[in-house]
Amino acid sequence: MTTVLEARGLKKRFGGNEAVKDVSFVVEAGECVVLAGDNGAGKSTVIKMISAVYTPTDGVVHFDGQLLTGQSPNAVREAGIETIYQDLALADNLDPGLNLYLGRETTHRILGIPFVATTEMRERAAEVLKGLGIAIPDPSAPVRDLSGGQRQAIAIARAIHWQAKLVIMDEPTAALGVPEQREVMALIERLKSKGVGIILISHNLPDIFAAADRIIVLARGVVAGERRPSETNDEEIVRMMMGATL
Amino acid sequence: MSTNTGASILKPLFSAWSWIFLIGILAFFELYARAETGQTFLFRIYNMQSIAIAASQILLLALGLTLVIVAGQIDLSIGFTTGLSAVVMALVVRAMGPDTGWGAVIMAMMVGIFAAVVVGLLNGWLVAILNVPSFIGTLGTYGIARGGALIVAGGATVSIRSDEARSFGNGDILGIPVPVVVAGLLALACHYLLTHTRFGVHTYALGANRASVERAGVNVKRHLIWLFIISAVTAGVGGLVYTGRFSAGAANAGEPILLYAVAAVFIGGASLTGGQGTITGTVIGAFIIAVIQFGLVFSGLPPYWQFVAVGLVIIVAVLVDQSKDKLTGAQS
Image (cartoon, rainbow over the protein chains, first blue to last red):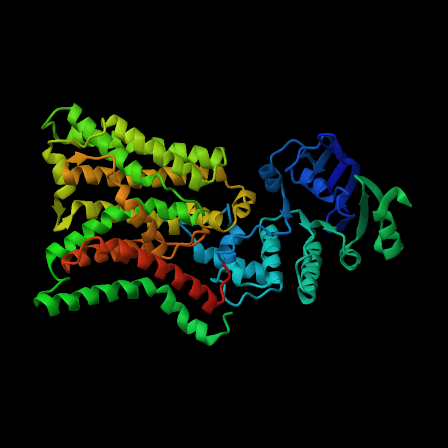
């Protein structure tokens, strides 16, 4: 296996508050690493340091052999790290195609004047979604008409389409019903089979055990432990999430 | 949802409601005119031109405003941006002396538009860089543009004598009044911008969810500044047309039109929360208002009724929009 991402000694201080004290871990290609932890454990801060929304106070992130620390969020995305936030960051009034291509729309020229290639992007989006096992009944309808699982699929399709090598997902099943949670879990499996590395943030134990190849438990800004799902159980993970109090 | 057949029948009806409404009021005035005077209302060149010119004056403010509203913002300063451009153009024409030809008039127009761009930049800076809510920020520049126009004009109307400027405001090209041609070309340009360019896609996305465009790597601040510049420029062109039509620039040239421009955008299907609206809708909205204005005068009713009528149409437009959402199951 090849390592896609290595975070070493990450630390983030906000004023007097040290949100992340010392976090190191690696993600292999095609592997799903779950960052588990209670609220305030530092999960969100860690992923924001990886996606370059925050600059670490100390520590470095290497991705695909290059140093990412200090780069812009755009440069990080260009390098192949796609972050899917809880709110999905979709434009609800646009169709799946435009959402898939948002910020990177294709155009074609008529008499030298550029026109956004809406139909082409729509067809491409339907194809990519089909590859994920998701059929969209009306590809021209705005994404607000879609189900939670389908919307999640569009966010994931965006990552696949732009050839992300690492996808970060923040609580992807938090707002979904049970069948849609299963859909998302299936999507994660497909991403893995394409060799994409995944960092999944969750504090939902069934999700953690369903998706993870490795579980990294954060508590109070440090790595409290690292386990493979087969070597551990719910109880131990919860105990680690509660941190040093035990 | 989409499985509801009742809704799917109603949906096209609702999206076409402004067309139906426009045809309805045209039919109403036509029947009224025939019954009262035995003459046609609509099929007279003079009436058609008057309605089109009134609609053009509204449109010049409403076109750029449509883009701003689609992006979820508002621009209240346009009324006095129009006035500022009108006054500045008149002052430059006057400074160059009478009968100086097209060169001077075009120069004056460029300076007038430059004044508008300054207001647009100010709006953009306030909203995009200083994060001032656009309702408040542009209310501030509304005052600044108003005062600025009155100060440079010395509080008076700046009259000019220029055949070129007059022909810009009152001439016609193949029977179509020049202001209508100008508004038509700008409407085409804005329609292209909003529906066929990446800029337009980002404008819709910005109105729906700012985070979506930000995380897609679009420079949202720069985008907002451009939107306010476009809004100021179309309003500024409105000022140039005003100065041409009346051979005078007045600080309050656009002030009575501001409300109509806002109304045209909302009648045309835009929403205060952003993410919705089209140039086609705004054009129809402007024509609805122009027909009401001209129709009421034509019918011999006291002109003040036009304010009441336009007010009622705005309320109807919002009610239709709300029931459309309810009936077709769209969430807003």
